[in-house]
Image 1 (cartoon, helix red, strand yellow):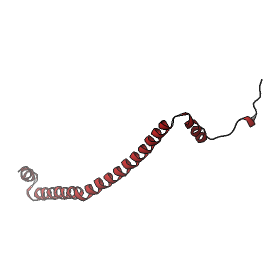
Image 2 (tube, helix red, strand yellow):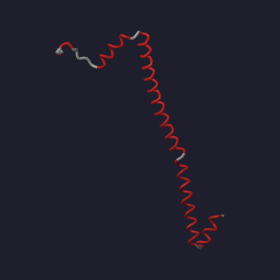
Image 3 (cartoon, rainbow, N blue to C red):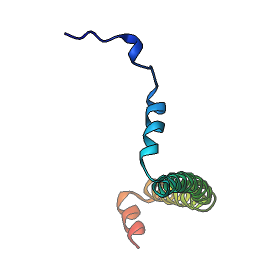
Image 4 (tube, rainbow, N blue to C red):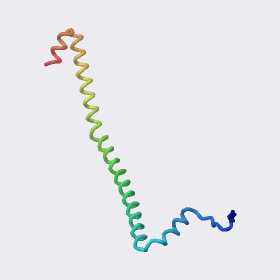
Length: 102
């Protein structure tokens, strides 16, 4: 059996091995893959920035425009309940139901 010498194998990282493999492809293929990777990185970063900005604008707009309407609606409903309760105390349960339906 042949014994392998550790000196025959050169320690190299995976990145060095992959970089060495690029030499087997023509330069046009290397340039195209480099351009594709560069474009993918740029598109991902741009999409990330846009989605971050859109989320900020959407959240801020909702807080400024919609939340006051919700609070006002809740205040109106509470006021209606208080008036109905007051009618019920003053006029009885049947009068409150009739006044609430009209």
